[in-house]
Length: 300
Image (cartoon, rainbow, N blue to C red; front, side, top):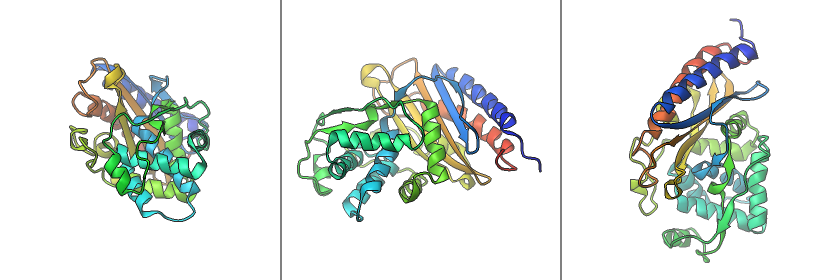
Protein backbone atom coordinates (compact mmCIF):
# COMPACT_ATOMS: atom_id res chain seq x y z
CA UNK A 1 0.00 0.00 0.00
CA UNK A 2 1.31 3.45 -0.90
CA UNK A 3 1.85 5.72 2.08
CA UNK A 4 0.34 9.20 1.53
CA UNK A 5 2.92 11.97 1.74
CA UNK A 6 2.78 14.44 4.63
CA UNK A 7 0.92 17.12 2.70
CA UNK A 8 -1.76 14.68 1.57
CA UNK A 9 -2.22 13.41 5.12
CA UNK A 10 -2.21 16.90 6.57
CA UNK A 11 -4.75 18.23 4.05
CA UNK A 12 -7.15 15.39 4.79
CA UNK A 13 -6.80 15.72 8.56
CA UNK A 14 -7.09 19.51 8.42
CA UNK A 15 -10.33 19.24 6.45
CA UNK A 16 -11.66 16.88 9.12
CA UNK A 17 -10.68 19.25 11.93
CA UNK A 18 -12.32 22.17 10.14
CA UNK A 19 -15.49 20.16 9.66
CA UNK A 20 -15.51 19.11 13.32
CA UNK A 21 -14.91 22.65 14.55
CA UNK A 22 -17.79 23.96 12.42
CA UNK A 23 -20.07 21.27 13.81
CA UNK A 24 -18.98 21.99 17.40
CA UNK A 25 -19.42 25.76 17.01
CA UNK A 26 -23.01 25.19 15.89
CA UNK A 27 -23.72 24.09 19.45
CA UNK A 28 -23.24 27.67 20.57
CA UNK A 29 -19.62 28.40 21.26
CA UNK A 30 -16.07 28.71 20.00
CA UNK A 31 -13.86 25.68 19.48
CA UNK A 32 -10.40 24.82 18.28
CA UNK A 33 -8.45 21.64 17.69
CA UNK A 34 -5.07 20.33 16.61
CA UNK A 35 -3.59 17.04 15.43
CA UNK A 36 0.10 16.23 15.21
CA UNK A 37 1.11 12.96 13.57
CA UNK A 38 4.59 11.74 14.42
CA UNK A 39 6.72 12.44 11.36
CA UNK A 40 4.98 15.68 10.47
CA UNK A 41 6.96 18.91 10.80
CA UNK A 42 4.12 20.50 12.77
CA UNK A 43 0.46 20.18 13.73
CA UNK A 44 -2.66 20.71 11.67
CA UNK A 45 -4.86 23.22 13.49
CA UNK A 46 -8.24 24.85 12.96
CA UNK A 47 -10.57 27.13 14.88
CA UNK A 48 -9.54 28.95 18.02
CA UNK A 49 -5.74 29.27 18.07
CA UNK A 50 -5.28 31.48 21.13
CA UNK A 51 -4.11 30.50 24.58
CA UNK A 52 -6.46 28.99 27.16
CA UNK A 53 -6.12 27.60 30.66
CA UNK A 54 -4.91 24.05 31.11
CA UNK A 55 -7.06 23.38 34.17
CA UNK A 56 -6.77 19.62 34.83
CA UNK A 57 -4.77 18.91 31.67
CA UNK A 58 -1.89 20.24 33.78
CA UNK A 59 -1.96 17.06 35.85
CA UNK A 60 0.02 14.80 33.47
CA UNK A 61 2.79 17.42 33.19
CA UNK A 62 2.92 17.73 36.99
CA UNK A 63 3.11 13.95 37.33
CA UNK A 64 6.05 13.70 34.91
CA UNK A 65 7.84 16.46 36.83
CA UNK A 66 7.44 14.48 40.04
CA UNK A 67 8.42 11.12 38.57
CA UNK A 68 11.53 12.59 36.94
CA UNK A 69 12.74 13.71 40.38
CA UNK A 70 11.78 10.77 42.57
CA UNK A 71 14.65 8.65 43.84
CA UNK A 72 12.38 5.94 45.25
CA UNK A 73 8.68 5.04 44.93
CA UNK A 74 6.35 6.71 47.43
CA UNK A 75 3.00 4.91 47.87
CA UNK A 76 1.31 8.09 49.13
CA UNK A 77 2.43 10.08 46.11
CA UNK A 78 1.60 7.20 43.76
CA UNK A 79 -1.92 7.08 45.20
CA UNK A 80 -2.33 10.83 44.74
CA UNK A 81 -1.04 10.54 41.17
CA UNK A 82 -3.63 7.88 40.35
CA UNK A 83 -6.36 10.03 41.89
CA UNK A 84 -5.24 13.09 39.89
CA UNK A 85 -4.87 11.33 36.54
CA UNK A 86 -7.70 8.79 36.64
CA UNK A 87 -10.24 10.53 38.89
CA UNK A 88 -9.19 14.11 38.06
CA UNK A 89 -8.88 14.72 41.80
CA UNK A 90 -7.82 18.27 42.62
CA UNK A 91 -6.71 17.10 46.06
CA UNK A 92 -4.51 14.50 44.36
CA UNK A 93 -3.06 17.22 42.15
CA UNK A 94 -2.39 19.44 45.15
CA UNK A 95 -0.49 16.57 46.79
CA UNK A 96 1.61 16.15 43.63
CA UNK A 97 2.37 19.88 43.45
CA UNK A 98 3.49 19.89 47.09
CA UNK A 99 5.72 16.92 46.28
CA UNK A 100 7.18 18.64 43.22
CA UNK A 101 7.91 21.74 45.29
CA UNK A 102 9.64 19.61 47.90
CA UNK A 103 11.68 17.66 45.36
CA UNK A 104 12.74 20.72 43.38
CA UNK A 105 13.29 23.21 46.21
CA UNK A 106 10.32 25.57 46.26
CA UNK A 107 7.58 27.16 44.21
CA UNK A 108 9.80 28.94 41.63
CA UNK A 109 11.82 25.76 41.10
CA UNK A 110 8.63 23.69 40.76
CA UNK A 111 7.35 26.14 38.16
CA UNK A 112 10.63 25.77 36.31
CA UNK A 113 10.31 21.99 36.48
CA UNK A 114 6.75 22.14 35.11
CA UNK A 115 7.82 24.42 32.28
CA UNK A 116 10.71 22.04 31.59
CA UNK A 117 8.25 19.21 30.98
CA UNK A 118 6.42 21.41 28.47
CA UNK A 119 9.71 22.44 26.86
CA UNK A 120 10.52 18.80 26.01
CA UNK A 121 7.51 18.98 23.69
CA UNK A 122 8.74 22.22 22.17
CA UNK A 123 6.28 24.34 24.16
CA UNK A 124 8.19 27.53 24.81
CA UNK A 125 5.42 30.06 25.46
CA UNK A 126 3.50 28.47 28.33
CA UNK A 127 1.85 31.27 30.30
CA UNK A 128 3.20 31.25 33.90
CA UNK A 129 1.02 29.71 36.58
CA UNK A 130 -0.46 31.65 39.44
CA UNK A 131 0.41 30.70 43.01
CA UNK A 132 -1.17 31.03 46.42
CA UNK A 133 -2.82 29.28 49.37
CA UNK A 134 -5.87 27.01 48.99
CA UNK A 135 -9.19 28.82 48.90
CA UNK A 136 -10.75 26.42 51.41
CA UNK A 137 -9.99 23.44 53.67
CA UNK A 138 -11.63 20.76 51.50
CA UNK A 139 -8.34 18.94 50.78
CA UNK A 140 -6.90 19.16 54.30
CA UNK A 141 -7.85 15.66 55.46
CA UNK A 142 -6.80 14.13 52.13
CA UNK A 143 -3.39 15.78 52.34
CA UNK A 144 -2.91 14.65 55.93
CA UNK A 145 -3.74 11.08 54.90
CA UNK A 146 -1.13 11.40 52.15
CA UNK A 147 1.72 12.54 54.37
CA UNK A 148 1.44 16.35 54.31
CA UNK A 149 1.70 18.27 57.57
CA UNK A 150 1.40 21.88 56.36
CA UNK A 151 -1.86 21.36 54.45
CA UNK A 152 -2.50 25.10 53.96
CA UNK A 153 0.88 25.86 52.40
CA UNK A 154 1.11 28.03 49.28
CA UNK A 155 1.49 26.15 46.02
CA UNK A 156 1.85 26.75 42.32
CA UNK A 157 -1.54 26.59 40.58
CA UNK A 158 -0.53 24.89 37.36
CA UNK A 159 -4.08 24.74 36.04
CA UNK A 160 -3.95 28.51 35.58
CA UNK A 161 -1.11 28.19 33.04
CA UNK A 162 -2.20 28.68 29.45
CA UNK A 163 -1.32 26.87 26.25
CA UNK A 164 -2.72 26.42 22.74
CA UNK A 165 -4.29 23.45 20.98
CA UNK A 166 -1.03 23.09 19.03
CA UNK A 167 0.90 22.91 22.33
CA UNK A 168 -1.47 20.28 23.69
CA UNK A 169 -1.24 18.16 20.52
CA UNK A 170 2.55 18.36 20.69
CA UNK A 171 2.52 17.13 24.28
CA UNK A 172 0.20 14.25 23.34
CA UNK A 173 2.42 13.23 20.43
CA UNK A 174 5.62 13.34 22.48
CA UNK A 175 4.01 11.42 25.31
CA UNK A 176 3.07 8.60 22.91
CA UNK A 177 6.41 8.72 21.07
CA UNK A 178 8.42 8.02 24.25
CA UNK A 179 9.99 11.46 24.65
CA UNK A 180 9.35 11.35 28.39
CA UNK A 181 10.95 7.97 28.99
CA UNK A 182 9.94 5.85 31.97
CA UNK A 183 8.09 8.75 33.61
CA UNK A 184 5.99 9.30 30.52
CA UNK A 185 5.27 5.58 30.21
CA UNK A 186 3.89 5.51 33.76
CA UNK A 187 1.71 8.54 33.08
CA UNK A 188 0.47 7.02 29.81
CA UNK A 189 -0.49 3.84 31.67
CA UNK A 190 -2.62 5.90 34.05
CA UNK A 191 -4.22 8.00 31.32
CA UNK A 192 -5.31 4.87 29.45
CA UNK A 193 -7.33 3.62 32.41
CA UNK A 194 -11.10 4.08 32.44
CA UNK A 195 -11.94 7.34 34.18
CA UNK A 196 -13.36 7.17 37.71
CA UNK A 197 -15.42 9.47 39.91
CA UNK A 198 -13.37 11.86 42.04
CA UNK A 199 -13.35 11.31 45.80
CA UNK A 200 -12.91 15.05 46.37
CA UNK A 201 -15.68 16.79 48.31
CA UNK A 202 -18.35 17.40 45.67
CA UNK A 203 -16.46 15.26 43.17
CA UNK A 204 -19.47 13.08 42.43
CA UNK A 205 -21.20 16.20 41.05
CA UNK A 206 -18.31 17.39 38.88
CA UNK A 207 -19.20 15.19 35.89
CA UNK A 208 -22.82 15.24 34.70
CA UNK A 209 -22.20 13.04 31.67
CA UNK A 210 -20.42 9.76 30.89
CA UNK A 211 -17.00 9.51 32.52
CA UNK A 212 -15.66 8.47 29.10
CA UNK A 213 -16.88 11.68 27.45
CA UNK A 214 -14.92 13.09 24.55
CA UNK A 215 -11.90 11.07 23.46
CA UNK A 216 -12.94 8.05 25.52
CA UNK A 217 -16.20 7.74 23.63
CA UNK A 218 -14.74 8.34 20.17
CA UNK A 219 -11.33 6.77 19.67
CA UNK A 220 -11.17 2.96 19.36
CA UNK A 221 -9.53 0.88 22.07
CA UNK A 222 -6.94 -0.50 19.65
CA UNK A 223 -5.49 3.00 19.33
CA UNK A 224 -4.77 2.96 23.07
CA UNK A 225 -6.35 6.35 23.79
CA UNK A 226 -4.59 8.01 26.72
CA UNK A 227 -6.25 11.30 27.54
CA UNK A 228 -6.83 13.94 30.18
CA UNK A 229 -9.66 16.42 30.36
CA UNK A 230 -9.60 19.89 31.84
CA UNK A 231 -12.54 22.18 32.47
CA UNK A 232 -13.46 25.21 34.53
CA UNK A 233 -13.80 28.98 34.58
CA UNK A 234 -17.52 29.48 35.25
CA UNK A 235 -16.70 31.80 38.15
CA UNK A 236 -15.08 34.41 35.88
CA UNK A 237 -17.15 33.99 32.73
CA UNK A 238 -14.44 32.11 30.85
CA UNK A 239 -15.66 28.52 31.06
CA UNK A 240 -14.01 26.01 28.79
CA UNK A 241 -13.64 22.28 28.37
CA UNK A 242 -10.56 20.79 26.75
CA UNK A 243 -8.81 17.48 26.26
CA UNK A 244 -5.29 16.39 25.40
CA UNK A 245 -5.01 12.97 23.75
CA UNK A 246 -2.21 10.55 22.94
CA UNK A 247 -2.89 7.80 20.39
CA UNK A 248 -0.95 5.15 18.49
CA UNK A 249 -2.68 4.53 15.16
CA UNK A 250 -1.41 1.66 13.03
CA UNK A 251 1.91 2.01 14.83
CA UNK A 252 2.14 5.80 14.46
CA UNK A 253 2.09 8.06 17.58
CA UNK A 254 -0.43 10.88 17.25
CA UNK A 255 -1.26 13.79 19.53
CA UNK A 256 -4.67 15.46 19.39
CA UNK A 257 -6.39 18.20 21.32
CA UNK A 258 -9.65 20.12 21.35
CA UNK A 259 -11.20 22.95 23.34
CA UNK A 260 -14.74 24.35 23.48
CA UNK A 261 -15.80 27.64 25.04
CA UNK A 262 -19.60 27.99 25.27
CA UNK A 263 -21.27 31.31 24.57
CA UNK A 264 -23.63 30.78 27.49
CA UNK A 265 -21.79 30.35 30.79
CA UNK A 266 -22.83 27.42 33.00
CA UNK A 267 -23.91 27.94 36.61
CA UNK A 268 -20.93 25.94 37.89
CA UNK A 269 -17.87 24.04 36.67
CA UNK A 270 -19.53 20.63 36.27
CA UNK A 271 -18.95 19.07 32.86
CA UNK A 272 -21.97 17.96 30.84
CA UNK A 273 -24.54 20.52 31.92
CA UNK A 274 -24.12 22.17 28.53
CA UNK A 275 -22.97 20.69 25.23
CA UNK A 276 -19.22 20.97 25.68
CA UNK A 277 -18.77 17.18 25.89
CA UNK A 278 -20.73 16.65 22.66
CA UNK A 279 -18.79 19.47 21.01
CA UNK A 280 -15.47 17.73 21.62
CA UNK A 281 -16.96 14.49 20.33
CA UNK A 282 -18.08 16.32 17.17
CA UNK A 283 -14.45 17.26 16.55
CA UNK A 284 -12.85 13.96 17.47
CA UNK A 285 -15.42 11.99 15.47
CA UNK A 286 -14.38 13.77 12.28
CA UNK A 287 -10.69 13.44 13.15
CA UNK A 288 -10.97 9.71 13.84
CA UNK A 289 -12.26 8.94 10.36
CA UNK A 290 -9.52 10.93 8.63
CA UNK A 291 -6.70 9.55 10.77
CA UNK A 292 -7.80 5.96 10.26
CA UNK A 293 -7.85 6.42 6.48
CA UNK A 294 -4.60 8.37 6.24
CA UNK A 295 -2.50 6.22 8.58
CA UNK A 296 -3.48 2.76 7.37
CA UNK A 297 -0.11 2.47 5.65
CA UNK A 298 1.92 4.19 8.36
CA UNK A 299 3.99 7.35 8.54
CA UNK A 300 4.46 9.73 5.61
